[in-house]
Amino acid sequence: MERNRWIITTIMLFLALAMMVSLAAGCSGKEESGGAAPTRQSRIPISMVINDLGMTFPDGMDENDNPYVSYIEEQTGLDLRVSIPPEEVYEEKLNVIMASGKLPDLIHSFNPVWFDEYVKKGAFLPLDDYIDQYGKDLLELIPEEAWDRVRHNGKIYGIPSLTDVPGIELMYVRKDWLDNLGLKPPTTLEEYYEVIRAFAKDDPDRNGLNDTMGLILLEDMGRTAPFFGAFGVQLNSWVERDGKLVNGSTLPETKEALAFLAKLYREGLIDQEFPLNRNNVFLEKIANGQVGMFSAAWYDTRGPIALNKNKDPKAEWMPLPYPVGPEGHSGVYSKDIIRGYNVVPVGTDYAAEVVKLLNFIVGEGRETLKLGFQGDIWSMEDGVMVTDFAEHDKHLYRGIYQSLVDVLDPVMNKARLDSLGDFHLFENLQIIEKNVIHNEFYGTPTPAMSKYAGHLEELQGIFTQIVMGIVPLDEFDAFVERWYSQGGAEVTAEVNQWREARLRGAGGESQ
Image 1 (cartoon, one colour):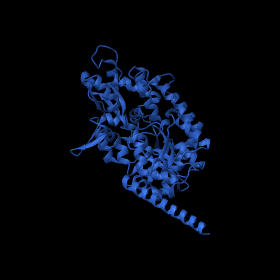
Image 2 (cartoon, rainbow, N blue to C red; image 1 turned 120 degrees about the vertical axis):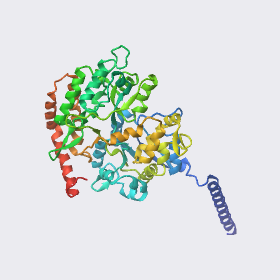
Image 3 (cartoon, rainbow, N blue to C red; image 1 turned 180 degrees about the horizontal axis):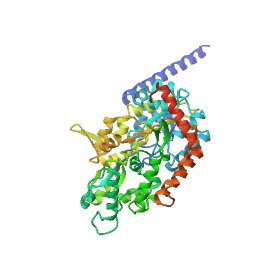
Image 4 (spheres, helix red, strand yellow; image 1 turned 90 degrees about the vertical axis):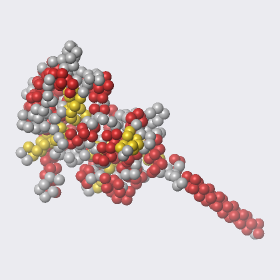
């Protein structure tokens, strides 16, 4: 009996001693680390499928091993496990993942049709309670208009990432070519035609060779928006006509714009190979000095225009007013307020952690993830942000994580763009913002859109053939008939039902 009591007492003393040693070690560790986040082994693992946005990683780094992933993990106490499908098959891969039954905790998609399809299938968790509890910054920085777009039956099924630019395209011209030919910057469509003709035919670079083009376009009618804007329309954008919303691609004004472009092509004023101009070829022709005018992306001043100026010190570029058409119209398409959708598939145990992660990216982590590490990539000198270009470009991949949930921050955006050099990036965005033609439909995709969108876009391929003269201009009328009979009529009816519901909800005024 005494022996048993001695054994029990010894065991209890041993356990008490072990506990004291453990507590002492724990306290010592906390003091030494200053309260650091949990070790990687003890962090909650969050698996995610996201897009690499075409970014590349420096040697020795990848999507799971780089300073910005480490920064997020240390600040949130999470263990990020990132999967990046190839960009060219991204959406197909998402569908495979959804069918596999082996689902990640977070998926990011840019496609509203994909989002809407799986919401209606019940594939995602509603996030309202998690956002209310863990998404203070998300609620503060994302406007109600965007939240309304990710609701289904009154519940939020996605956390939107916002588009931080109002639009993409604005016209740029070789000012030195204008000067060589004694021409003024064009404003009207007729003046645009004269400049484009002169650039193609009158040796604007003064080298005695027939080696210049007046205007360059991208494949699939890319970089044409200002010319459709001159007729008051934009492709695939909804506008009001006679009290109803109609698709811009089907309007008579679009036929007029195609006629204008077809004339330029027929006279040899547009790059004759434009249907083959993938983005890299398009940019290379501009950089090589073959092009006098094009509809530039707002950031092209830092891309092909800068490359052209480096190759040819005489090259001088300037922005142009958008071409004004016969009825006084001008402008360019606007970007949708939502750029991407973050969803949490049904079955995950970590919805709260996903919301905490996204709230960190949009809140405490926004400056570091948007701008890069202060002191390494940027610094403040005399109250002005100065960026180390080499380090900035090396670590652009941070945008893969930052853009998961982007928000509008004009002050930070201006400081960031100005710090990149004298490329007029912020000024370009201001020009675009003043000239956007808004898409009057901004709801989630309707059922008919989800069903017919791909086919209707294929039908529109005839526009390239019209511009090239392969089919006559009047084929546009046949296209419109096919568009309506092969799904467009259903889409148009649903779009107008959406509009009527919005008008009723706003007491007769559009929200």
